[in-house]
Amino acid sequence: MLFALTARDKAGALEVRKANRDAHLAYIKDTGVVAQAGPLLDTAGEMCGSLVILDVDNMDAAQAWAAGDPYKAADLFESVEIIAWKKVIG
Image (cartoon, rainbow, N blue to C red):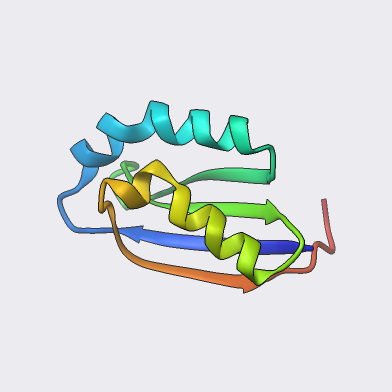
């Protein structure tokens, strides 16, 4: 089942994101459940959040993945939303 995780960074947290990006990308690779992912960009083209499409069994698994993300441990996000998602195009 697919879940879309959208997260918005706290204001002024670009350096926190950059400092934890390698660990976040390693987590994505190691967990093997990310179908698609990438940063959200602000009007200046700087990273300001995340969009992650998870392929997991249920919402509990999606929430557990989010809880284990190094960005979560770094307290990067102002908000996180996870919602079931149905792929139609692509």
